Length: 174
Image (cartoon, rainbow, N blue to C red):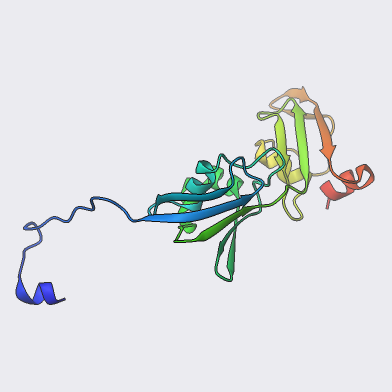
C-alpha cells in the first residue's frame, strides 16, 4: 500500500516476474520407495512430493494417503487424481508438512476381458460394482460372471488378496 500511495501506474505500465519460488522441506514416510525429508519448491502439491519420493511401494496405499499439517489431516486418493487432475490443487504443501503412505488394506486383482487388467485397491465400503467402474464396464449389479458387453461374451477372473479368504467375497459385495 505504501508503494501505491507514492506511485500511480496504469495497468500496462508494469510487470511483476517471480524469479524463484521459496524452497520448503516436506517429510515423506510410510510405504514409499524413498523416505525422508525432501526440499522442493513451494509451488508443488502433495502429489509432486509423492512422485519425488518414488511413489508408494507395492504394499503402499494409493487410496488413503495422508497429508499431515500440524493437527490437521487430509486424505489423498490417487484414483481421484487420475480421474480429475485438478484434484491435486486441493493439496498444496507448506514447510514441514508430512506425507504418510499407509499399507494398502483391500487389494483385488482384476483379470480377463477387461480394459485394465491389474491390481486395484478398494477403499472403505467399495465393492465389486466400483471395481468394474474403474474399468468402465457397465453390467447389471446382479450379474457378475459371465456377462455380455458390446455383444461379446466376457469372463472375469477375480483374485482376492486379503487376510481372510472366507470374507473376501462378502467384503466385495457390501
